[in-house]
Image (cartoon, rainbow, N blue to C red):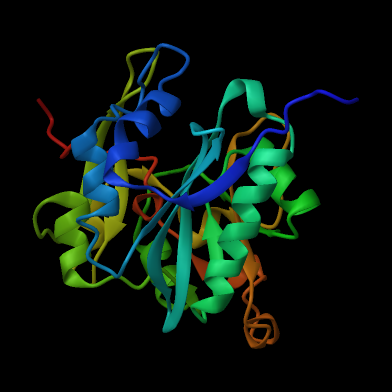
Amino acid sequence: MTGMKQLKLEVRETRDADIDGVIALFCETGSNPYNWCPAKWRHYYRDYPEGRPLSLVALIDGRIVGHYGMLPVRIGEHAAMLGVHAYVAADQRGLTVISALMKDVDQRCQAAGIALICGFANPRFTIVKTTVFKWKATCWLGFQQGIGADDLAAAKGRKFFFNYSAPWYDWRFGAAADQYLSRYVDPQGAVHKQLLKTTPRTVAASIAGAEGWSPNSTYPAGREGEFRQPFSMKVFDERLIAQGILEHGNWSIEMGDSDTFQYTPWSIT
């Protein structure tokens, strides 16, 4: 149809002048359940210790309508990116904006020699990524009650895991500890003792009664009636496929590997 204005879609790195606009995008519904503010954005995209993170925005005629973040991580000894903070404005939730973001993500990862990009998207976005953007849903993480010695032993035998430096633990949790137990109060008011991360110093007695993710509760598929967190990836270095990176039984993933879980140090009070 003639006379219609052609909208300009642009994807680029987030600038300091965009930060307030990104936060407004995250909070467009009028709520802020993840407590976004400029300080939190800078924590992720200016203070991250494992390499240079990337915050990408999609703009239509100068309006911020989408965001995708990437944090450098190591999977074993392989350079990877962890996709985080994906969001598209409610009035732009066709495939146009998210496709532009994901295309830019792929190009940047491949140009940088990244072996894979992975993420903890919700089940709905996981379907989009696997059906449209050629990601693979590698495993589904169940919330296990009572993490113990068997789970610690199983984790030591897995080939693929998030391999963080000591500064990352300080950045993520604020202080060094033998294990990172967090207090979570669910919407019904029940208190949960969550095991976010272990260390080589963790022993079973110190995490008694905690819930968390374990290799023993890592599955190849979801299950109707039970929430399991999908973990998906796009592999650029195909040698990793031959090594079994897409096999759920080769992974050890903990709740603290996902930025979704906020850390509130556990206390019985």
